[in-house]
Length: 116
Ligand code: AMP
Image 1 (cartoon, rainbow, N blue to C red):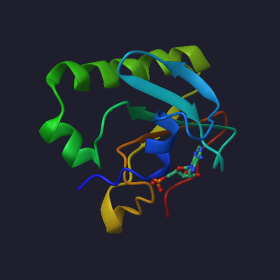
Image 2: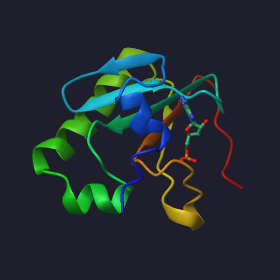
Image 3: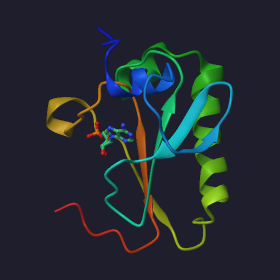
């Protein structure tokens, strides 16, 4: 079940600020408050969606396509397509998801180390 009080829900309701990188009708991208790389951007769909499974199972196809295309737009905007980047989705307890609103991390701007 979706937690209306999660931090990204509050960002979407403009109850707390964020540093926006890109926004369109369905999607919002903003800087991570605790960056793990020189560039660390989070991307979220603007509708209630708990995690990746919820997103692919329940979001309308148009919105799924829009989300992934918007990631590409942000990669171009950040000018990281040539040097590279890492996209991460943490999901559930084992995945270490802290905020229960589906999101992707874009990490870039330097060599991103191995996960372990
Ligand atoms: P995850 O562990 O995948 O759920 O990642 C949640 C991310 O949200 C972490 O990298 C946090 O640093 C980030 N975060 C938490 N609160 C905020 C906030 N108010 N603005 C931007 N990023 C945030």
